[in-house]
Structure formats: C-alpha cells, structure tokens
Image 1 (cartoon, rainbow, N blue to C red):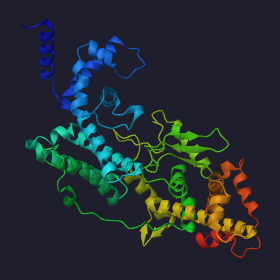
Image 2: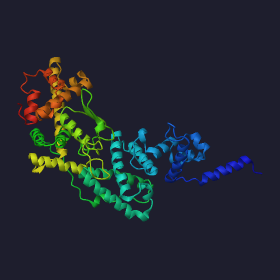
Image 3: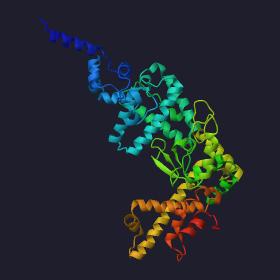
Image 4: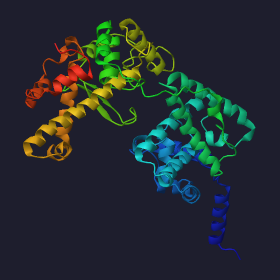
Length: 457
C-alpha cells in the first residue's frame, strides 16, 4: 500500500527530474521567477526573491539544483541574473549567466593555481569584458558558452571573433593592447576547452591570422616639446590634449571618456576623480593645477550645446558616447605637426606624452630622495632612503612628491596654463621651505635645466 507521504515524495521526485540542470535553461526559469516576484512586490527593496517565496511559489528545487549542480547559492544566481554583478560585484557587459558563471570560476581557478593577484584578475577580467560584448554585437548572441558547444556553427563563431579582433586593432591604442585583450579572451576559452566544458575552442589560432606590430617603450616628449604643443594649441579642445596626456598622464582612450560628473570645481583643490573600473590602475584623483581655465571653458562651450551628453570629447557616431582612441591619436598628431613636435621623424603620440608625465613623476621621486638626503646629513644618518621611508609619513611623502611635480611642470608650461589657479598658490610657495641655495645641484636647477631642457626665466 502506498501512503500519501510516499505519493508526495514521488511527485516531488518526478518534478525534480523534469527540471533542467543546464545553467542557461535555469536562467529562463530564474527570469520567470523574477518577473512574477516583481509583479507581486513592486516596491520591495530587495533585488531578488527570498528563498521562502521561491519555496511557496513552485521554485523549491531551484536552490537544490544551483547548490548541487553548480556550487552556487540563490543570491549569487540572482545577482548574476539581475545585474551581472551590479553594485555587489563586477558588472559584466553581457547577460548570459552560464558564460559569466564560468568566467568567475576561471578567474578564481587562476588565482588559486597561478597565484594571480587581484590586480591581475581585474585586468584580465576587464579585457574579457571588452571582448565578449563586442562578439555579442557582431554575432547577435551573447551565450558564448552554448555556442562553443555547437560545432555546426564553429565557422560563423570564428568569423565573428575575427571581426572583433579587427575592431580592437582599429580602436585600441596599440597592437600590444589589442593582442592583450584578444589573448585574455582566448585563455578563457582554452581553459574551458581543457576542462571539457566546450566542444571546440572558438578562437583557436586566431592570433596567427594577424600581423602584429609590437611597440617598444614609448620615447617621452621633452619639456621643450610639451611647451611647443601648448603654444601651438589654438582651441580649448587642443589645450586639453596637452593637459590630459602630458600633465595628467591619462591613457589615450581615457581622456575622451571623462564625464563632467567626475569633475569637482567647488573645493579648494579642483579635481577629476576616476572610478575603479574606468581606469586600469584603479581609482585615482587628478588635481586640476594646470589647464583649469581651458577645461572650464571647454565644458562651458559643451554645455551650450543642447545635445551634449556630458563627455569631454563626445562622438557624433551612433552607438558611441565619446571619441575612440584612434580619433584622439589623430587629433594629437595633428597638433604635433603644427607644433613641429616629432619623435624619430614622426608626429608624436598621446602615449609619448604620457611617458613625459611618468618621467616627471620619477624625477619628483628622485627629488624627494635628495631632500631626504639633506635631512639625513643633519641627523647624522648615512641612508637617505631610511629617512624618506621612516622619518616622513606616507602622507607627507605624497605631498612632497606633488610639490616637486607641480614645480617641474611650471618650468614647462607658460603662465596661461595655470592662471585659473592663481587663488591657490600654496603649492608653489611650499617649494621655498627646502632652503637648498647652497647646493650646487639644487632640485630647482636640475629640474629646469637637466630633466626638461627648458631655461628657467
């Protein structure tokens, strides 16, 4: 005789057997659950339904399948489903849960097996997140994991990835950068292939399809060349090319993507703040010591345009919010031609302006060490590094480096580059605290004459 309890258990078992285990199929069930829950709780502060609601509304087995078959909890599943990470994690630019879930597993595996640091994970994840949405647009489908399990469409998928590579080469700052993005995505598929998660590697051999022009370390602009660029600049747009690449040291594609919301003109130290995902090196704040007038005038001019979207260099191309790296390089080279600024006979690039910035930053560190050497002499110490590292607090070290950096740039750019900052001159006054008049190699002379080749006047 079969009891009611046994019948219920049998029905539950049959219901479980009818549920799909594939994550892509579960995504459809999850979206159905979300739609029902949101219609019942339109004002709920939660982003996804609670487990009790799932149990009471016919989704009781979802939690079991996620846990047993995918080692995933309900919150993680719905966070992936609703925002691909949202404010609680990395925001993916595709929606396919299966592809995202395997990508997360891949990065965790690399961290465990290859000792990837957080910065390495972040860089490779960002590159993968650049490639996958491009593929989705090109092919018309973002379920890459499912596509790589269908050998019949392998040629079409491969051609789509090849088009992605073409677009990366055209838009990114160099072949090095394009190849790095391509290789980061390919490593992900190689890992899936080794693990038996896909039927074929959709990017197999794709790097060999192209000729790669590997660039060497960019030759930095000199101080005289940066000065000539500023003088040759005829518009605020061109002046901001000089400020952005040579003084702020931003990457080629970062400058046009700066949004007005990142600017702060109200404080005593006007600045632009970069978010963690917007900048490869993480969050950073750039103080607007130089070019403040040019930036303010450019933003005012943009604001008078009724269709302005808030970006520093907006794009008129449909589907793009701001100019791409290739367009910015063209503008910078045009300014270099007019100013007669060349490197090895060719117009300089934004990357070479950025190298100038890093040179000055390095010099600022050297100046700080020299200052620590003077303190070491007074203290009877022999190692200036120990004075720098232990006598000065980290905050004080950063402050002094900024002082040296700003003083150095003031030897390069004419007066009109920083007139907007006249009300706040404490940075340059602070250089007088360093009383090195008796030193034959004072920081001010060496910066002005040796590093930048700009005569102090």
